[in-house]
Length: 185
Ligand SMILES: CC(C)(COP(=O)(O)OP(=O)(O)OC[C@H]1O[C@@H](n2cnc3c(N)ncnc32)[C@H](O)[C@@H]1OP(=O)(O)O)[C@@H](O)C(=O)NCCC(=O)NCCS
Image (cartoon, protein in one colour):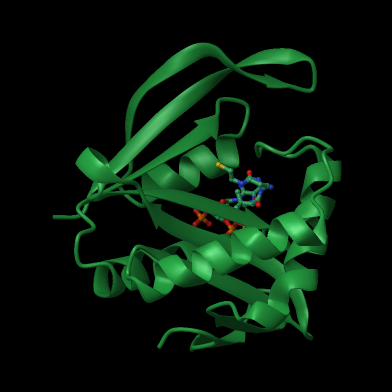
């Protein structure tokens, strides 16, 4: 049973106390608010201002909890003073790609640059390796105008597969979409 399991408790580089754990159904409101704030920020993620409803997010959260239970996903939430400040996950694909997991990572604006992203990425990859038996490859996509994320992924041994020129429309500009992968086993 992974629901609510704590994988880390400690302090960030800035001395902020954090708890990192698997999600529970009661995280619904916090997760929805977190995603909607990121979306409004128009940072380097798919959502660019759209607002998710509690109903949509409930369906998503129920689905991901089921996937975690079936060992087809890992997802970790970072909390600081009971506020959700970071999310990362690996979600397995299906059928001929059932051994391939897609990686995602975000940290809320006020807590970037504290070392949380790096720590969270390490924890999620380790959880993926121990919890998902079929995980052999992790893939991810990154906007070419996001050098912080790209540099972080390279440090973790991700290899640039290539890019789709203009594959992303971000703030009315066409940006290259970079694909990366890491072989686990
Ligand atoms: C990308 C992101 C997840 C990184 O998380 P973070 O907690 O801010 O990163 P960390 O503090 O752990 O730092 C990771 C590395 O990036 C570097 N870094 C972080 N912020 C930086 C900045 N503003 N300028 C330069 N380097 C920076 C750090 O020095 C560190 O490198 P090091 O290990 O050599 O010291 C976070 O900035 C974020 O959520 N951004 C918006 C959403 C996003 O881009 N998600 C990724 C989509 S692919």
